[in-house]
Amino acid sequence: MVSVGTFDGLHLGHMTLLCDLSNQAAARGLEPLVVTFDRHPLETIAPDRAPGLIMDPKERDVVLKALVDNLVVVPFDESVRNLTVSEWMRRLRDDYGARAVMMGYDNSFGCDGRGMSPEEYRAKGAELGLEVLMARELPGYSSTEVRRALAAGDIEKAADVLGRAFSVKGTVVRGRGLGRTIGVPTANIAVSPRQLLPKPGVYAATVCDDFNDFDECKAVVNIGVCPTVTDGGVTTVEAHLLGFRGDLYGRTLRLYFAKRLRDERKFGGIDELTSQIAKDIEEADAVLEECGRDDCE
Image (tube, rainbow, N blue to C red; front, side, top):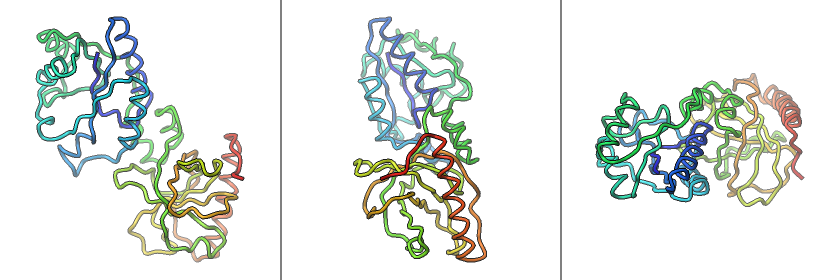
């Protein structure tokens, strides 16, 4: 039994579909298989409208593989873009041995599939000897809803839809070095240009590195252009790790966002900025303490 989709973010709606896929496949004596893409389809169809990715595709694939065992990643090129629903179903049957197809309640595939009803999908499947099933409905749980929440800075809502804290990762690179001169060193984190970021502002977050070289840390994260000390224009991700002492350059860090604290704004000078950062640190510490987090050692 096969399910086809982008699965960006692997939110709770996706998890419901994957659960139904596994259960329905087992009931029919079939193996579950997920077919996904190496990129968001809009990156090929309309690059100017392609959204930022909620989850790195390689990380998504690792999780999918752990959940369903059988995973096929298809390069989404023009030939795939132009496949009709019937052509897709024929490929699923002939190339992957599909006997049945599981679809999300708001999912579609095939260049002629947008707006097609479940009954139409079932009819096309029946013509090719494929059973078409629909996963349980979970309204409000979608990649679109995650993007909407992040655009509004509503980290808690994004976490509710994802079923986990929203996170991003990147390598620590050299920045302006201003934070160190004012006693608040920050890690300047280079994230993928494909990565979706929350609304610019200041956030409470926790940080860990991919190699577990240090314990999880509380952090204050600024996403924006740092208007007090720059002319703006380039969005950066900078994290001050509470209590951390050490060199972070070259490390890959992951940030787990807990709460948006405030908008980014231009202050009257460095002293005013430093004073506000101290308040941000105090608030972030309190927020994360409430979440049961501890400072890094």
